[in-house]
Length: 223
Image 1: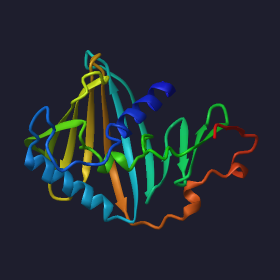
Image 2: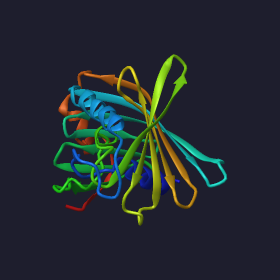
Image 3: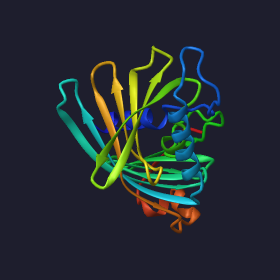
Image 4: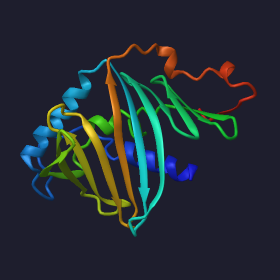
């Protein structure tokens, strides 16, 4: 389950790793209303100096049966982040990434990918559209007192493991509420934001792994 969770997070956080494009894809026509909404989401997120987001990850199989539910918290500040999961804590100070496994008391240290191909929590809030996706705005729906707008994204690269992503946006706040990834094998992964707190004070030490706080930790340097 731990490996599945990690793989799912990588999928969710790396669905778009290239810079946003302003023109439609040659394989189809993008919905200008969807593009306008996506641009609003990106602008809103970039206006925050820091973000603390609590999330829930639900995994379903092809029969629609829930296979597992995980909760976590993401802290973001510029290009820095900390991701707290049930089994793992991931730290990134913008230069290095520390992936700490609680069960084995082991941390792997690696460098940030300068090409920007590695996942970051920031990507799930900002890079939902680029030259690798077609997107359209679907119908609105009510969720409690909120009006939720649904954006459907389909990859132009048909070799990818997933064939569709649904992004749900709060119409009023322009914040991402959840995303749902549909894999070709029938599995579905729903990543829901249960709480989002912008502009709280986060010291830079939050994003750095301190071995002194983890007695006996084994450090594996992959740099």
